[in-house]
Length: 68
Image (cartoon, rainbow, N blue to C red; front, side, top):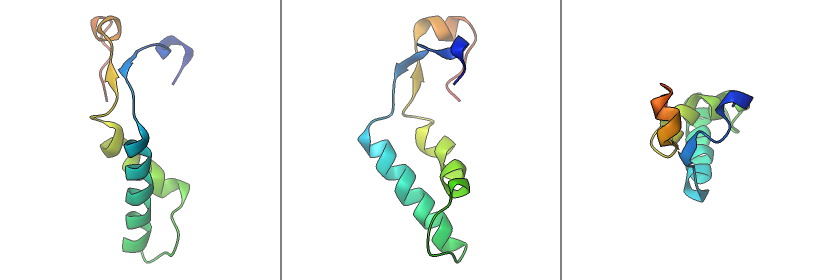
């Protein structure tokens, strides 16, 4: 997140988001036939996991920032 986005989150990801990231990355690796997840696996599941957990605040929304 760049400096111009600091403070834009009205609500952030909690501990369950971290658990979902980890489990999603493990599942992705397993489906690809690998025994352990990689950074790419975490990156692949990050947007779907965090999309509904991180919300922009009113000012960021007024500035045209989206929660994706």
